[in-house]
Length: 306
Image 1 (cartoon, rainbow, N blue to C red):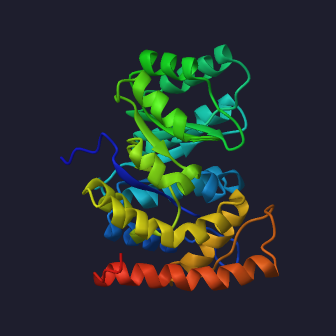
Image 2: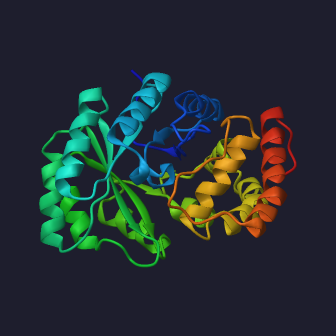
Image 3: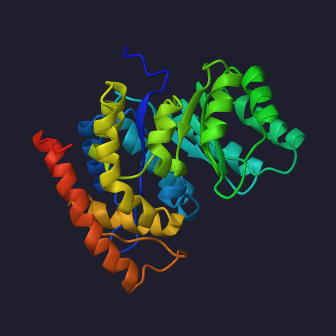
């Protein structure tokens, strides 16, 4: 069996496609997974915040995870996002994923105190998933403290991956890799705008949504020692990142619209409540989406400009 860890590369966070009737479009989800696999991604995360996870029912979450697992068929790891309003709900969700046969999970928990966080984390770990990825989400602050993360890493064998989404993210990438002697897989998410910096710091994986071909190409260029090519290609998408990463809701709107324009999702629909995508947002999307599609078309054809 192919070795899936350590996790290394681009792990796609899947947006949820909706039909005109506001139902989850599982066929379109599979199309997105197949396209990402062709591009060479190293794994998937579903459902997560970019999936509008808290607007999904448990049945919708489970069917999405099951659809992705069946499509991937063991080629790369699939992380099922576990996050509920409280620990009991998170336990219920995690048990349901494990019953599906999904052994890799992402855990996001509310923070009150170190003691309570650890207690809740241990309750989830006791359900015995094979691999836990912990989401350290705080886009305006430092996130979980280093001591707590190191304690969890040393206490819980299944805690093997950390998704850092803090401000700033870079120094925390470096500290966590140093503290754990590189044994904890460190991934970047929301801070993909600092992707080149993260790669230079040795981050193992990045977890963006959309633009599968571009992100995998940047990552592969860097790993192959073609740093200038990686930087040149990354510079082409900086305007996209500057626009889409202004808020999570704007990112969701934009990347679903991109997937729609690419013919992967039949609609760009989102679920309420969400920040509206107004006429100025639309003007920017109409400018940026053709550029993304042109870059990806060049990559698919093997054309080189960088």
